[in-house]
Image 1 (cartoon, rainbow, N blue to C red):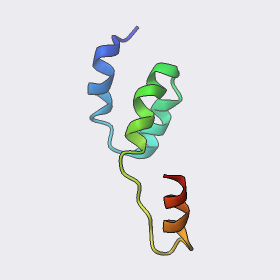
Image 2: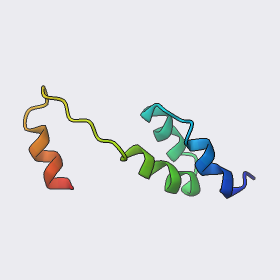
Image 3: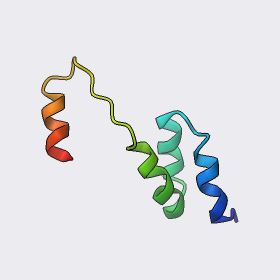
Amino acid sequence: DLPIDILPLILAFVVKSSHLAAGALVDKTWNEFATPRLYERVSIFSWHKDAKTKVCTHF
């Protein structure tokens, strides 16, 4: 078993959101640490119709 203390340190080096998402699927503990990192930065692209409005209603 991996000590829970080093999990945030490991996830700090994970850059790609797809890799964080995969980490979130490992188990509940990984999910608790990886999910907040996935939503630290949300990108909204101009070609998504009404994207900004939709995101603002969710947050």
